[in-house]
Length: 43
Image (tube, rainbow, N blue to C red; front, side, top):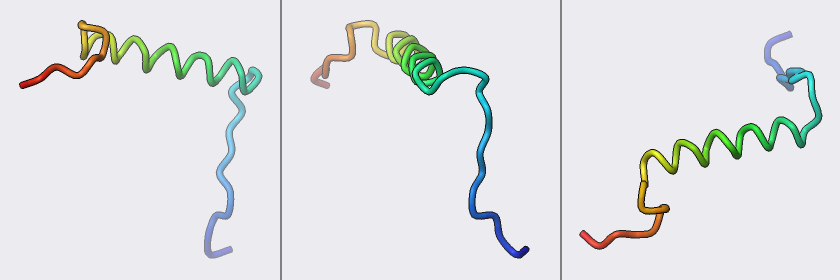
């Protein structure tokens, strides 16, 4: 076999659990980077 067609992994939960965790982590990261709530701030 020369190439891999699919790479899959089991998160141990439903796709909703996985998506919710990812969204929460990104929201936390965004809140740290943009303490003003993420609104565009003119330079």
